[in-house]
Length: 92
Image (tube, rainbow, N blue to C red):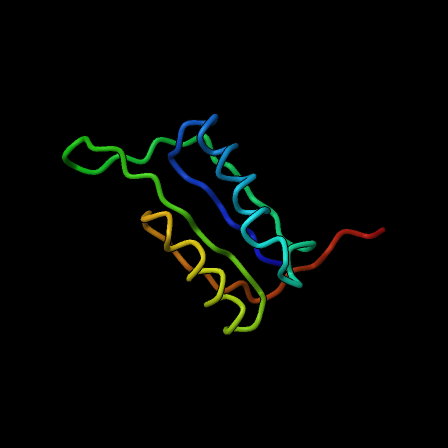
C-alpha cells in the first residue's frame, strides 16, 4: 500500500495536492490501495524558511515505488522514500 505523506504544507494546498495525487496515478494498478496522509506540521530550516516535503512509505515492489517517486518529482519538493517492512490490514 503506497502512502504518500504531505508534511509542512498549508492544509488547503495539501488538500489540492491530495486530489492531484489520485488523478496523476489514476491509471495505475496500485491507486485503489494508495492513501494520502496530510500532517499539519511546520517544517522549518535553521534559516527560518519553510521546507515542506513529501514522504512515500510503501511495501510495493521497488519498480512501482520508483515510478511513484518519478511522478512526485515534477512537484519540485523534497521527497523521502521509506520502505515499509510489512502492512497488516484491518479485519474486514
